[in-house]
Length: 318
Image (cartoon, rainbow, N blue to C red; front, side, top):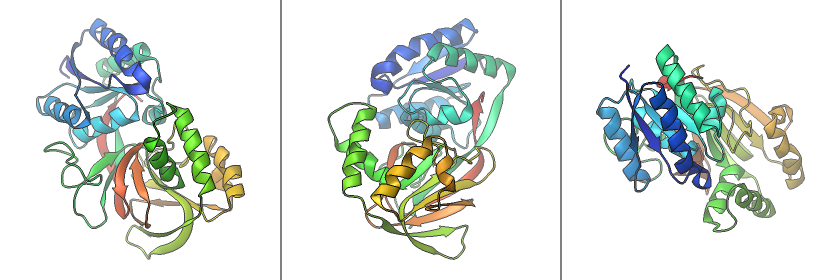
């Protein structure tokens, strides 16, 4: 393991926490004897390009400082390579770090954890989801994923959950709102979506089997257990078992949805009669007028196909 590592920083994560987090994380790594180079981008494509360059240049590790969106960018650069990924989680949700049992919103502790794990050789191989349009044409989000390497040819990687349904509609609405900031914006978006709520016809194909046709509220494809800052929508998902956990919330009333949704924080919603769970390596997901989100980032409209890729990334610690 080379002592030269790269700190991949989102200065705006967590309403500015990313910028403040970089310094204590870098100090902890330098105190442990590592040479730290910091990489920032002018925007997401530029940041991803710089991350790809660091990986191709042989950096000893790529350490993402920010929230799940920044970690999502970092995954596009390191997936399928031998470059290990470190996480300094200072965003709003931090579900990837939670799934790994890593420090959250404590950049100095996260920096020390990364340094100790690197020195001790504590590198864990975990699965990732790989998602693409079901017809195989064009990037999942309609954009260039940032150059050669993992993520090209229309594919995107995700570490936690792919969401498609009521939850992604809340994301759509929240992303359009200029006020308020932070989690309150999405709470208000949820209330607004409830007012317009109705189930949607879905078509699911699991591992090439017969198509499942159903009306549903949402479908969540979990490589990891949670999204949205600790909502355990796929509570049984393991990061290294080679399978997705797929949670389907079936057609239900607004009243039922309001009663069931709070249970997602404990994962007890999985026992409700309206909820069905599956396990699969590959899923094809179709529904009209539904946007897919993975790790909180928009992928584009369904249909989408997702595949669980075993040991796709090496993570530091956890």
